Length: 359
Ligand SMILES: [Zn+2]
Image (cartoon, rainbow, N blue to C red; front, side, top):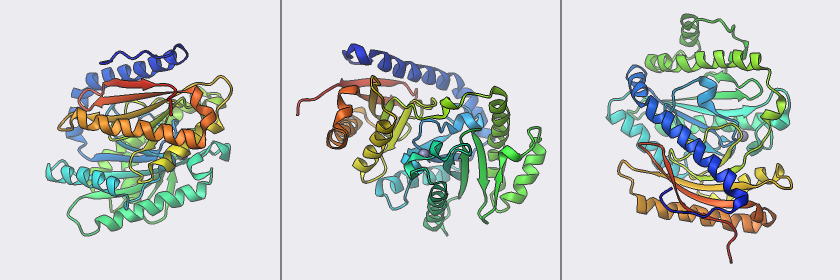
């Protein structure tokens, strides 16, 4: 911590745990950075993952990808819209930068999630309506396709479903066909999977198929491990204890199951997504439960600290105002943390903490 923050005793354990998660991630990130660099030389496709802010959706774990490999976009329900100005700008910058550096194309993986065992373990952001969440993902893919049609950038959007009981992927191709990885043989070889993909994603650029392949093989292995573990169902319920607001890659370190619920920064109606996140916390709140809110933005590589501090402060204020208006009974049980994450090390420093405010 760069600034000494006195955390009230009842929240100290949570703040320490948050910092520990960040330290672990940052160390793993730095440890693997050379390996990741080598991996990217072989698999240059930029993997952009659009997913729900639900704390259980840890896509990197489901696919056994290297730390820092995926570029994640998180929002409640996995809802995005190409018409959101800030989002459109941020997304365009990534696609164009990738194009002009000659790094290869971008594969946009647009996800939705559900549970096969109980619809109430599905997506709260879509009020547990699986059909609507699939329609939302397909609709966003269509928008992306239209927005980039005829442009020189190599961008290929696909929809992938996540069945959270087994953390198994469902691939959708762009001709309305889907395939469940949970139904594929667990001993499928890379060659067999590749042959399958050539047919399934027939118009996907070859390099992208090649780069997607290890992620799918990772999921096949992951499904087998989940089945082997036979884990108790309680793990699958909402237990998040962090409500996060912010974005960029500031929350990449927070991919720990059931830890954080992230309200993305991209929706122009920030209050709406914060309110939705509070709603999920509220639905699963019980007497004695404490939670943190975390406003975080990344800095470094040309993004200056004093500027993003203002953004973090603004998010923090919005959290308070929204909580006060819609969920005032939760306020005594939450502690607001403000953090900045160094893009190059993924290390977070806390720049402020606050419990109750005088209004
Ligand atoms: Zn969800």
